[in-house]
Length: 93
Image (tube, rainbow, N blue to C red; front, side, top):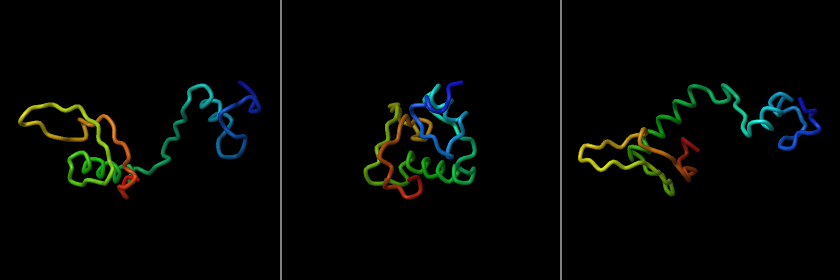
């Protein structure tokens, strides 16, 4: 492994381990399991579903989806590709 002095994208402090820093250098991302509680994830998921179904309409939110033009087409979270600018939704943000 490369010494911490050769790591470019993270700071040498006590926030990340050397292994985490090296993983980030090698892969460009870092996965920290259980960083967000299951309870919070479920809360965010429920609000996301409400946004996708247009039960709520936060200002400025942009939902990008594959539209299927059929009379019986149901809007759902499964048809959403991306959600942008959701900072006005208190629950998700």
